[in-house]
Image 1 (cartoon, rainbow, N blue to C red):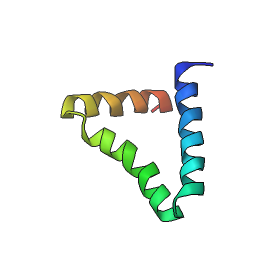
Image 2 (image 1 turned 60 degrees about the horizontal axis):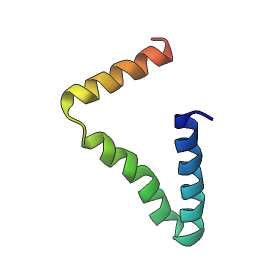
Image 3 (image 1 turned 90 degrees about the horizontal axis):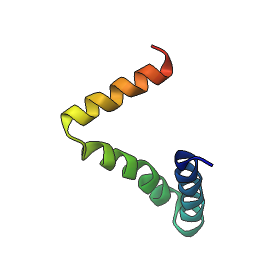
Image 4 (image 1 turned 30 degrees about the horizontal axis):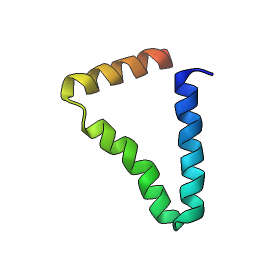
Length: 60
């Protein structure tokens, strides 16, 4: 299993546990808020590089 697949599987597991333990709105806030906060911590050059790589992967 690749590193990214392990991270994705761990994220799904954490999301399911959060949905069981917390009210659905709090779990949703955490699940959506963590990636958004991580993106906002990047500097502008890193954000541009991330957007460019994502577009290449989509075949645009």
